[in-house]
Length: 446
Ligand code: TRP
Image (cartoon, rainbow, N blue to C red; front, side):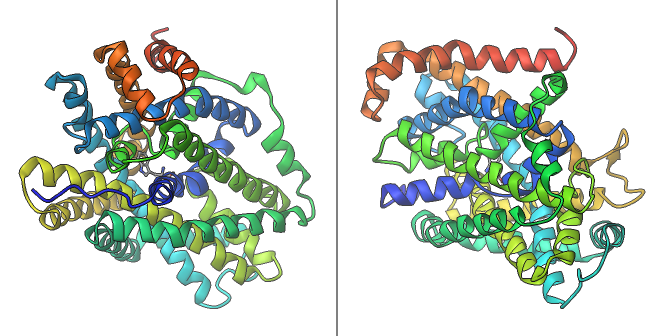
């Protein structure tokens, strides 16, 4: 087995973790979930989920990784001293695979849209319905999505192969500041669009009657998805972390990730309303509505290029972290080199992503109960597997590790004693009960 690598600096670790968290989840998934789940109501529930459940879950997952210093398959067993808890790691590796299967498809779409922008004036003067046709023809009935997703997977695999330090750390250091800059410019840009007030109202108006169990479940799932929680990504990064404070690091990840998601909303909703497009468009929102906006904007080609580059950069730093979960697990489990393990993981993901992509085409075999495999994978992971993963990690750390051992470990990781008392209540009671209640309520049992 190769020697365990670790991050060379606190900033490298933070940049990589934020890079993992910020991605399609913030820019593609958050706005369409918010649009479909009542705008302002979703935003409020989402922020509460991040603060009360997501932030403690980040601390929990980072700490498990840092205590275990091993791959995500064996981490929970090692920390609790009981192998039985390793089921969390296996569930996580399975979830990571499922997330990648649909994630790479969307990442591929973003590559296509960079090229569409380059194919000069493609979006120029097109209205929403012709852009919808453009998207449908490309995504559902051409071969290009397969090419793009395979290209994206190979690019990810190469970066993962370069190793933790060289690949992930260096990449994130260059990519993250660019990402921030582009989204801030866009958010300022849309302030000056005419007729955008309704968009701000939709996004910021809190209507309590719109909060239903399914809105709450979607917000919970979205918060875990966006923070990269519940499947071992953050755990793996925690295992490479030798210094720094877990609470501070978690706070920074949660703040930066949430800021970008909220900012993405400030870009998308004012713009969408300004041009009379439905916020409930669904997963295609970013790919139909935004080009329609760019088409009518002065300088739209440039803005479009910036936007889709942003989406691609964000997606890449996230896919790196997802593939890392599989690569590190297979390497440690089967005692093979990282290179071989990376190749196996890459092959599996190429097959899974192509099937998800194929499931979106008309009359595809992979359409079950009127829902394509793509959407099954998206809903099962983000609404159920990730929150359940987070819940089991909380139960393991809160109950299977003695209070004193946990206190010592947490103090070592920089947690203040007064915060430990709050954290203990959160990890033992609040996280497990809240997640369980939300699931039971959604499934109609409660
Ligand atoms: N959080 C990323 C995003 O918002 C996606 C992601 C990366 C992820 N690693 C994860 C989601 C682990 C869930 C679990 O795009």
